Image (cartoon, rainbow, N blue to C red; front, side, top):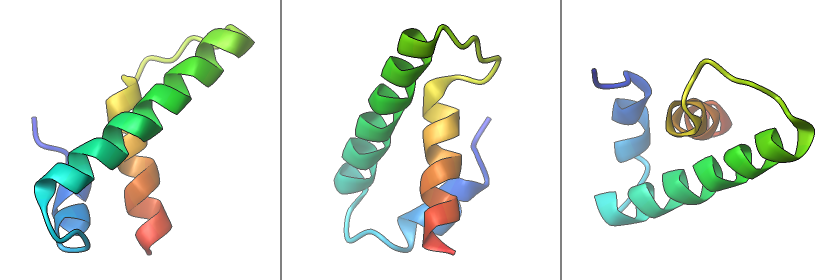
Length: 58
């Protein structure tokens, strides 16, 4: 299912490739932090990254 925050994000990027790269980097950082702390998350890192980037734009 498409995350509603993607609509907010696409409007703030010149192209979708940059958006994908930013989401991937953020998701990787989130995943690494969860591994280091031993945190278990129900949400996938990509979903968390999209929400995080969308909230930073506000």
